[in-house]
Image (cartoon, rainbow, N blue to C red):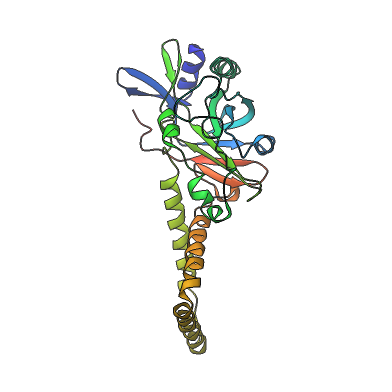
Length: 291
């Protein structure tokens, strides 16, 4: 195992970062992760809105013209063992994923021996999402928890070598949408959550919209008509403010959520929304990805 990891380091797939007294291997950025359509279908079919599931993705490395890519070609699902032993923290399958340790490390060893890298993933359930909450679905459910962020710093150890790979979060709610949220975080190569990327995506789309709107040329009559409509909306809002304010807030929340979406044809960074097919998620050069 040590020889394989050192071989990948020599080929520039991995680099060593010093943390305390140890060298920890990380993926070298930039790179891409491609999830093939069969894996997308499997994730959708196995997703359960009432419990957390998870396991390991098999990511096979490749390099072409200096561009590194990992192709997720297989998934090993590992049983959620959180309820095997009683706990006083209220943790169960509906709010926590803790893989069966024996099966997890068996799968880890098999994946490395096959020449692939393991990407640990888990799902977030959405069974209790009520209608008003659906508006905020993507902002709240599609985010890493404190436990997710902490565990994303934990490397795998093989003899004297440690390696840290990105984690993956999968969320879907068939009663709300046919789409899946697939996002990768930390592993020393990505942010610990998706907020900063969502904020940047929202800003870029607002800037694009503003640029397109400012380029419009209205005739004097069109400007007058637009002014009348604007004033009319203000007057209606004042007259029916009790009814309109909740609608406006909901619309603004939904609009804000829509602006954070990254779809598979947009060269998504770190996360993507998709209903089917293959997707390639890009990891740009990361500022922490240095010795």
